[in-house]
Length: 383
Image 1: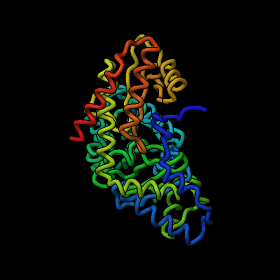
Image 2: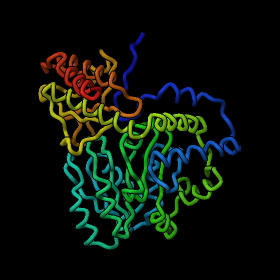
Image 3: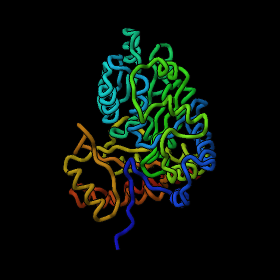
Image 4: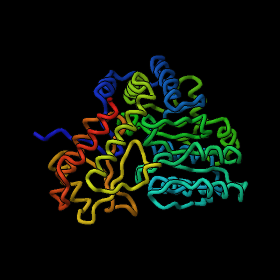
């Protein structure tokens, strides 16, 4: 018998038993009154998690589908778009805009650092024709968090709409969509929202709606204007994954029962403990702590350790799965997620397994050193 798998990657993440049980309910018609009532309930609960009064849509797609919907609905071919790249997913955002024919000004920031707001401000002042600004809140490829609140203040004074990728942070970090003046906020199901892959969530402000109404580019499946008409009747334009909607309501109930502030506090605690453990083992973190993520920790691999071998040892010998680096960071870092249905015990077990795997891969980690530092953070919090 194989041992239990500990999924410590930044998506897909473990699904709570409550959510799995909810998804096993008998299928109902996606055009039934019962499903319409479910959509109504889910939409209101999503607004609470998004901290918004704006429209929120549930799309049958991955988070990337939600990002594509955002780009497709606000850009025409030739429109100027400012894309902020702090990692692999920021890079993907710019690629999406190019696919739709946008004239993309991609600002590259060193991977492992955050967006420099002064650069954005200068770009917007220099070009009043920029139609959209694309930004990633939580860049999982580098474990960097960008200042969306500060970005929102800058973009609010410009005609551009602010489009934000919060796929890996919504439900795990405090995101004030309306207060931060975000025009389109996108998230996905398989991260901190504790669901399997398959759903994207998109909120849309009035500023963004005005841009969409004037947009001439066409798309079919991701037409948010069509989705808005359907949502007015608690419906969706096309067939919805009914079982995932059942699971979504259960995951939202879990978040709201725990209390959003407690959810955010739990994620901050797990992140602090993980970072303390990594430093206790003499390893280096990738981003500076002032803009490091609460849902994933990026660790620079020691020169003596092959990242692929380390991850393979963790998985095959200890059944702990962590992520590797992406793009220019491939082979240089590994990433430990602590998002969604994650606990103190998950962190302790992962660090313990990491200590053994490091030793087996040629790095002399002191057994118990990392675990001890994580324990001290947890004990300090409980006092």
